[in-house]
Amino acid sequence: GTFTQTGRLGEVFSESVEVVKIAVFNLLHSLGQVKDFDRNNYHLHVPMGATPKDGPSAGTSLFTALVSSAINRPVASNLAMTGEITTLGEVISIGGVREKLTACKNHNITRVVLPLSNKKNVKKLPDEFKKGFTIYYVSNIRQLYDLAFPEGERADDQMLLHEHLLEQGVEIDQFEEDNFHKVVFEGETIQPDNQIE
Image (tube, helix red, strand yellow):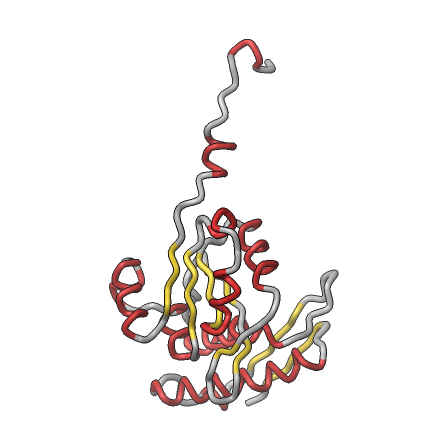
């Protein structure tokens, strides 16, 4: 099979795609899924947008997108991820953790996957900033697979999913709920004499 890619991909990003292909093949082979993965054709298009796409941080996202396409299952909802992937299937640290979490906040994404080696960066962030997040720290693609594609009852039961992930070595930080949007937007009351008719 072939794997083609189009769009505005930098050199590092293109290299990351090659690494992800190997990681996906190895994982699916070890799980006994999609035995003809290497015979199928896949195409990756990264829209140009305003920001050139380069750097290895998209490794985890590319991995889950390719696995999703190969096994024909959607990725779990309300889940953002970042991290570099090695050919051995390790998820290694990235930069710009605060900026990436800010983007998640701006889009109301509360569940985030980060490399375990970036946990120290999250600890340095203010408590107020971390409110509302559940952060999963993974160190390999098997843990990422179990989180992105939960099976059976774990797909609907977060407690069961968390128990399973902890058994697999995933570290989880669940921060207190962020009520900002609820208080500001849903809690606003407009007095009858201030309403526009």
